[in-house]
Image 1 (tube, rainbow, N blue to C red):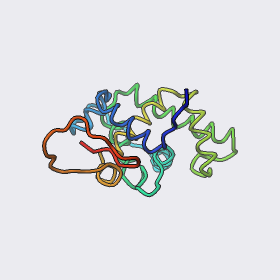
Image 2 (tube, one colour; image 1 turned 90 degrees about the horizontal axis):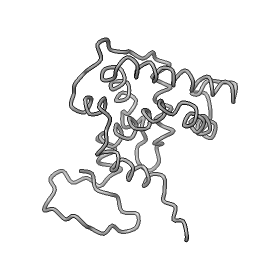
Image 3 (tube, rainbow, N blue to C red; image 1 turned 135 degrees about the vertical axis):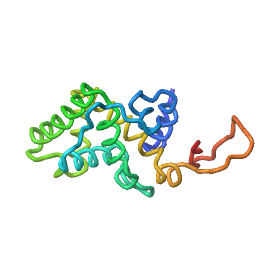
Length: 180
């Protein structure tokens, strides 16, 4: 049996469609514009830069905007700061600290000072050592990206007013999936 590899961007698009049906409660609250945190968490400037750099590793800029360009770091900061329980906020902050600790241990400098291959290696280690943090970060990055204007209109095929329902439309190789 042959294994068919798909490009990373396409895999993220498919994952975004799959994740859409199973969004976490904090993400659902953020998308509805609700705030649930008793005391909002404000990230420091270095933490905000680290969040932006991590999101950009997950969805880098290519021929379409990356996570930073789509405003994903602001979305992540809002969801974690305003829509999550204190325990989740603490887990996220611990994950940010662990990211820099892993980076300094492996490469002798903070994550934001690493080049792309080194950043990818640190993120790979995070997926194993700080799984809860990484899963939250990945979910927020994907949702933030594909619900942004840039993600919905430049990465996905966008039709603001859809026509009739066609449940099974064949796609041509390389064709964008449709934003809903």
